[in-house]
Length: 422
Ligand SMILES: [Zn+2]
Image 1 (cartoon, rainbow, N blue to C red):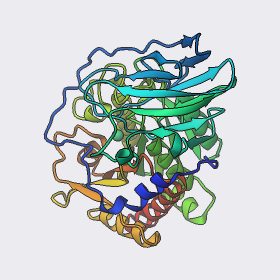
Image 2: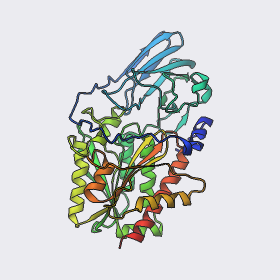
Image 3: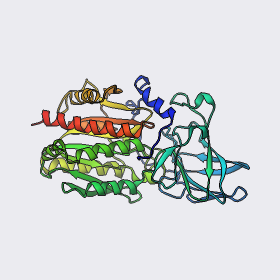
Image 4: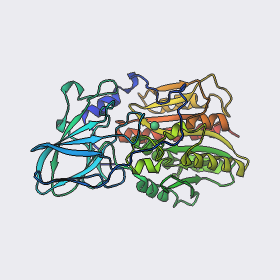
């Protein structure tokens, strides 16, 4: 994402992140039912606006546009709806647009009742390189230009320069299952990495895992990402974390001699490719299914972990699940719990990350209710004693800082685990 330029508002949101309120991604007391429920599968195709000379398409993986109509000579209105409800508010949109001739038009993003705008628009001309929409073309009331969780526009109008060539417009970079598989294939070209299928999603997409390090190691680290489809920054953070663990440094090599890292890069490929806000094809939030395991995606990861633990009579020492939300937050296991395999390790790790990044103040939210397990972090901790956390990256965290933080996080994890585990 080298060509990723950040407008002022994104930089501001990064600088102010230390003071912002921690928003719980995980409501602990609510036992959500994870039995299968119907979802409304999105119609895919092209919306033609002949008089305007403009065509809009949602017909690509991660595409999300549930309806569109023309309001006047220069304005299209987009309807963005969720796969089912109730649902966490992550209104994901992604579409392509082109025209018979070059012209400026307006697209107003509107959301189903109860949802407001969340993702600042990104633009791409090839689906690979993305940059935020120029803030002059992001039309919302002035007081909402620098919107945040508590103060958001109901709708947002984007001024777009339409040409004969395709312009991509999306809430984040398009990071679909194919792209993540290509990344996993690249990582697994290294001699110490194995890549295997561990299960299938409801629509038959492969759920795969990387096994990194000497296969006979009896010390394990678990890494997962993308239970929630629009959480692209979590995916990018995970990739940078894993790239550090697989690099040629002396530190990483020594780590791989002693520890095996298991990585499931995308737990919810159906949700991702279908452009969902949050759920799988059974309308379920997978990160509430780690107690009941009603869904095949969570079951695949669980069975893989148990298989790996049994293979070498191995122990999980660390588990990390990558997500995205409004800010960078670490959701940790609270101090009430001292039954993990290295008590206090995550707290020490966060202190070390802070020391390694000048001026950085981690936003930490400990959690003191681990059962029922419901979410992956709790399952890793309660079942395996792995020191665990949810690693949340902000939607707007600058991508170069995101990479740096993940690299430092990986290095500091390596140092601590090598130090604390014989
Ligand atoms: Zn999430």
